[in-house]
Image (tube, rainbow, N blue to C red; front, side, top):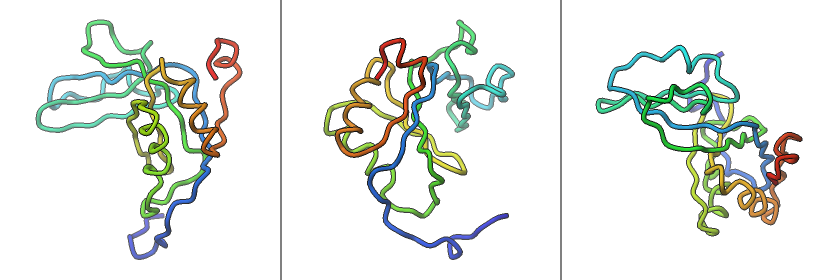
Length: 151
């Protein structure tokens, strides 16, 4: 089912979204302009994303699938906004990332059709979880991450 902008009600985003930390680390890989989606980026979990522009092809993928000879930046950890986020809902990302920015934590985002993903440098995950929880966000952390000392 496709929707147009006039069919989706516009509303201001609420506070207190539920964020889920996914296991594993991600990196941004830089490929040559016009590169096809590499096999290693297909079916990557928890998230894989590709962007093309005239000067590069960028792939976000799990660190363990990206070949060692590929230019990369990271590692990042991914937090998924648990609820469906309507495209025209205003202020969602602002509300989620503002507490991190105020705490001088780095952040980048990726949006999918259903929701938003917040990427935080791997070494800042514990701080991000604490900041969000302080600001009233529910953050779920996988058992594996908890056992490793994350959050």
